[in-house]
Length: 327
Image: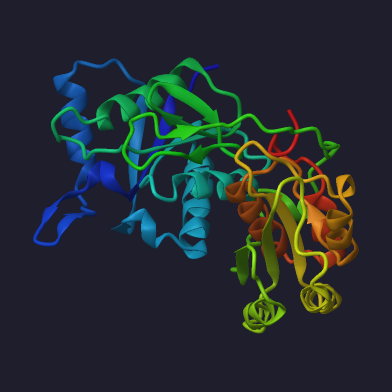
């Protein structure tokens, strides 16, 4: 069934930017611009109500607090009778926010679409109105519950999508990755969309030739609660670096939740393929399977932010919750 009462939630980003002395900058007053464009194009759209998170931001400045504010605004809109949500957002971190909201809004009884544009609304040959009104039309036609991303006439899975281009209109894609993990049979009450979350100290670190144990120790000394390691290939790393492995074991013993993704755009983590991967698993790392960086980071945030223990966070991370690691 299509949506008839949509929440249009504006957070900033290129789509609503206007020129300033320093270049394009986020701007308020976007509701009237949308209504004017809709009238000029004589579009037949479902009813929508506008909400704005202030101040509007460049998505390069996105934080966990913004994610929590978005989730709260969406919950409020649904409680007030909205049956669908279109969230407008800058493109730099759009895929990160789509992934985070996928896990923050588990169980939400309405669909959520995120969109934005590569050029500001009103600019010559801009993609802004096509993306915005296309997303509204998609909601009107009917979309499965869950979080999605709409861009360049394509509807994509919110926990699988990545930004692959800095300037093409077709900037977002879901790359083929092996996604074959076991699915959770239920969503625990602690992870329900109505449960509040707390900010989490998370870190992301790629393996690279020459990474030293003291580099990792310095990072972990900042109070990191969750660590996302980007491994080589199918989940390997410098397995002959005993100092680095010792730092990982020490961090796990102290309660840090550590997960591993593949650096390969089409890759997935399968620790048992190589001995170098098995060494990492023995240090306490959990495989993210074929998850993207965006999805793994958002999932870590949602799990740890819900107050789960290390063991519970690792258990639920290893299961598919919303299509992020299983087809």
